Amino acid sequence: MAVGIVTPQSLYVRIADGEELLILDVRLLEDFESWHVEGPTVTSVNIPYLDFLTEEAAPAWKKLLPADQPILVNCARGRSAQLVAEVLDRHGYEVAYLEGGMSGWSEVYAPVTVIEEPDWKLIQLNRVGKGCLSYLIHSGGTALVVDAGRHVEQYLALARAEGVSIVHVVDTHLHADHISGSVELAARTGAHYYISGSELQGSDIAHTALEDHRIWTFGAVTVCVLAIPTPGHTPGSVSLLLNNQYLLTGDTVFVGGLGRPDLGGKSREWAQLLYDTVFTTLAPLADDVLVLPAHYASRAEYHADGYVGAKLGLIRETNDALRLTDREAFVERFASESGATPPNYTEITSINRGDKQVDATRALELENGPNRCAAKHANR
Image (tube, rainbow, N blue to C red):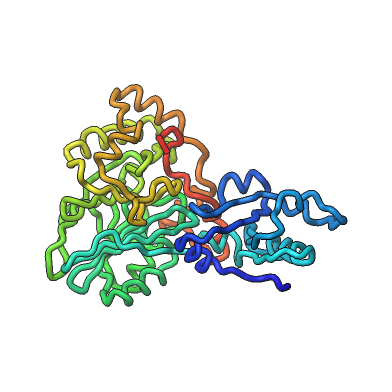
C-alpha cells in the first residue's frame, strides 16, 4: 500500500459532498480542542504524534483506530501527519495525510451564492478553516468586495469567472484576527477602498471614509448600499444594508452571538456602544432582513442553502444576547466575559493599519487558529 496525499481544497469538496471521513488529528489535545476540521459527516479522533513514535507489536493506538476504514491524518502543517501516515501504512492501514495540515485548511475559500437576481448577485466566500466570511456583490459588470481576506487571488479569480470588474472594496472594521486583503485588492484593481475613518486614524493607508459615503449605487440596475454605523466590536464598525433586505454586519451581530467589545482595552465603553447599536440602531430593521456576518463559530450557523446567515427575526428569538435588554446588565456581562484574546491580534491590527509588513510565511503563522471575535457568553 502507499500513503496518499489529500489537498485541503479536495477535502473541502469531499466534506461538501457528504462523504463520511475519519480524520486522525495528531496534534496535542489542547490544539485539537481549540481548532480542527469539522463537518456533518466527519469523525475526528485525537491521538498525539508522540504516541506513534514507538512501534511495538501491539501499540495502544491500534485499539482506537478501525482497521477496515480509510484514515486521513492531520496535524499543524502536514509534516507530522505524513510521518504518522507512514507508520499506519506499515501496519496495514489505508491511509493518507492532509497536505499542509491545519495551515493549509485555513486557506480554503468556498464561494456560495446567497442571492441571484437577473440584475445583481451576492456571493459569500467562506474561509472554512478560519470561520471568516467575505462577500462579492456585482451588478451591471461592476463589483463590490466586503471584508476581503489576504488571499486576494480568490477575489480576482471569482471576479473573472463572473465577468465583472471590482470597483469598490470595503472593510466593515479594522480586523484583529486575520490579515485583511482589502488594501492590496484595491491597489491591484484600481478600486476605491472604504473603511470608517476612525478605524485608520494616524494611518497612511489611502482610503475613503465611509462616513462620507453613507449611500451609493453601482451597476446597470441600482443596488443601494447603506453604511450604518454599528460600533461596539470596534468604535468604527459599520454594517452594510443592501436593497433594504441583506445586512452585512461585519463583527457586530453574528448568527449566534455579538462581537466582543474588549479588544481595544475599553471594554465598558465599547460595550455601551454595542448596546446602543443592538437596541437602537438595528432595532427598526424588519425581522425578514437577512443577516450575513463576517465570522462564524460552528456549522450550526449555516443556513440550509449552504451559506452562513439567518433572518434577523430568528436571531432575535434565538440569540440570548439580543434579549438582554437591561443596559447595565448587558454592559456588565459583555465587558467582563469575552473569552480568550485572539492570538497575535496586536501584530495583526498593526499590519491592517499599515504600520507593519510581513511575508507570507509570517502571515500564515499569525493567522493560525480559529477566529475569536465573538463574546463567549453569546448563545453559540
